[in-house]
Image (cartoon, rainbow, N blue to C red; front, side, top):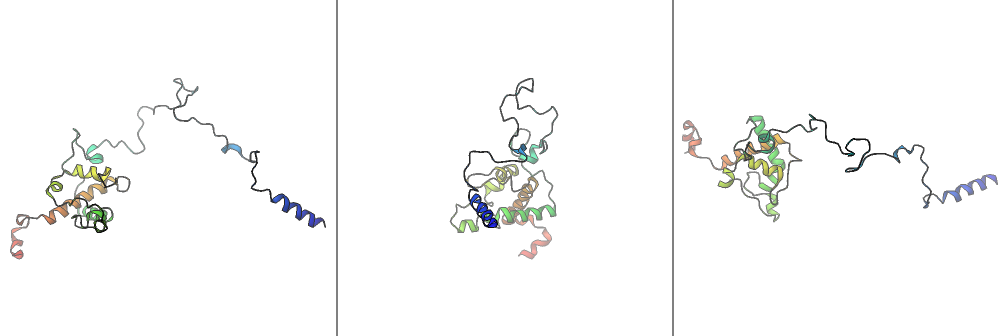
Length: 197
């Protein structure tokens, strides 16, 4: 009988779990409930200027680095104009990396040849400009870098997906694509011109 009553008491009292209560929950370690801290723009009696938000110590360096090189990080010269050529050296390995990154991020909209014939255009999206028009061939590398970084019209920003150096490598590959679709006979060595005829 005692076992039956004990079981009944446990069952009856157990039914109240999860019910609303005005009493605070029991915490063995209340440190997480009380976290004294300053909120942004609040006043502080600790500092002489009574401001909780303090300026960084003079000489502090950002966690992300200074990024003072405007040509590399923004595609701009000292006067704020777009640079004409990429500051990243063109190498075969870099060109292969640029081709790979172009295939991942750019082909979907711009097409594998950069001619705006892509799956997105087939699905009735607004076609992007072809890279093989004169305006795009004459565009400074810095302006293309800015477009990749910040987006333009329907194109989103890719600065969070594509590292800075990879953006420049994509531009190198883009220039190779442009050259492949706009080559002149003078670009071919004379010894190889006979094979084309």
